[in-house]
Length: 247
Figure 1 (tube, rainbow, N blue to C red):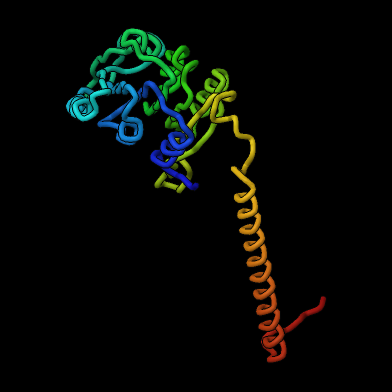
Figure 2 (spheres, rainbow, N blue to C red):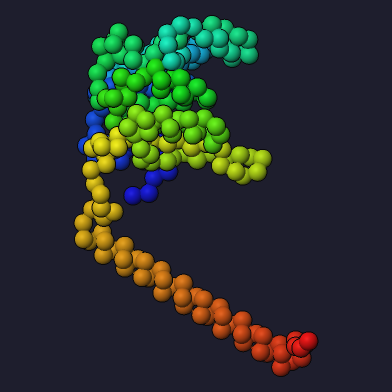
C-alpha cells in the first residue's frame, strides 16, 4: 500500500487495529479533519493559540461532540507566550503543558499526538513526557533544519522510532526538500512487532515476480538500445560521417 499523505498513514494504523482513546491536535489551525473523521470515537483535544481560529474550532467541536478546543499554546512549562496575531501585532496567549492539561481534563491513553507548531516542537514535547509514555503514534511536522535533529534525538530518548513519512514540501526557490511530516511509534510498541517485509508467502512471490519482470524489461531495453547505437555508429562510419583519429 503506497501512501504519501495524512489520510493514508492514519487509515493504515486504523487498519492495523489502533484505536486511540485520546487524540491531541497541537497547532490545530482551522482543524485537522482527517484526525476527527478517521477516529471519531476518540476524545479530541484541539490546541491553537490564534484567537482568529477559535470560531472554526468551535464549529468542529459542535460537529464532533467528543472534541474540545483550547485557545492556548503548548510548551515546556505553564505560563504565557508572546504570539503574533493575524495582523502581525504581538499578543500574549496562555501556555500549557500537555501533561498538565491531560490531567486537568481527565484524558487518558493510548494517545495519538499531532504536532504542527512551526519551530518550538522540542518545547511542546518536553512538556509532554508523561503523555509520550502512553503515546503509540505521534506525527510531527518537521523542517529540515537544526530542529529536525533535536526532535529526532528527543523522540529517540523517549523510546520512539520513525515509522512513516508523508507530505513532503519542496522549496520553490531551488526544489530542495523543506519539510516533512514524520510519524513516530514506540520502538517496542505494537507497530514494531512485525519483522517480516511480507505479510504472507503470496506477497513474497508476487514481489519476486514483479522484480524479475522489471529486471527482464531493463536488460532487454539496454540490449536493444546498445544494439541500435552500435548500428547507427557503424552506418555513420561507413558513410564517412565518423573519422577515427589515432594518436
